Length: 202
Image 1 (cartoon, one colour):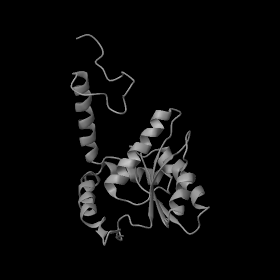
Image 2 (image 1 turned 30 degrees about the vertical axis):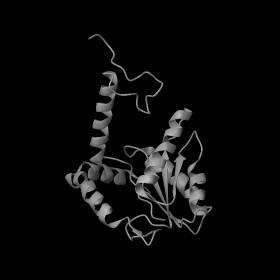
Image 3 (image 1 turned 90 degrees about the vertical axis):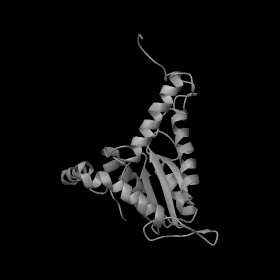
């Protein structure tokens, strides 16, 4: 199987961090995004068309987060996956939690294959590479894949230093400031917690 995160030795880690810091890496996402928008997705004769370098109708996508004992946190992954599925148009997208909650990576992998996937794309919903990306997710995915010898898989890089995360961060800051000013409701993350407020003396 093709596994972007199969190497866990120190040399690989240093190489990964060097590439993350390089100017080439930081400008890369924009080129990748433009390529994807033009080349990866397409709808032909009412069906989902497969491209060599994009997600196709025989691909299953698993978006995996850490998992939490807090039910609300786990449900947020379901909401994100629903948004991702709707915006991407990918036919097979499943949520998974690395630990502490269901569905597991094994469960999600099985669902993807059951729905017709012969390649599974495991995409970590993590900001930066760490032990979970280097070790835990690859081990759990390999274990899941053993039950489905006809399916290949790939583990993608985490979100990392993607330039669009700047927009996400800026949007979140603006929304929270609007809420503090009384011009917006609490966001989904803060709803019911009353944590998004101004602290300290004015």
